[in-house]
Length: 115
Image (cartoon, rainbow, N blue to C red; front, side, top):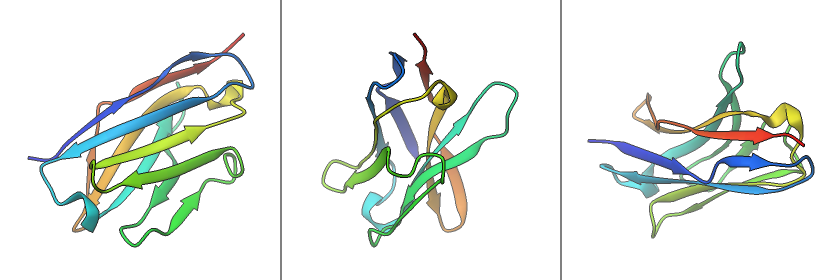
């Protein structure tokens, strides 16, 4: 079955950096689009970035120029490099695989940006 396991979250000061990773299993990773979403307390889950199977990328306006999504098909891994972090980036971050139109989610990793 599809499994997605995120890691890399933590507490970081404003202006700092974190790198999130999501290891996928149970499907042919290279064939499908992958995404990062986030959900802050009291807010709806929102798309942060996605990367298609062909390599195309898309970013939320709020993270453009600060976050970079990448994928390593040999390691079945999708990553999110987050730089210049702001308190408003604080959220639970989720990895998502879209397979034949159905979304599969990881359990999430918490990112807290605070001094």
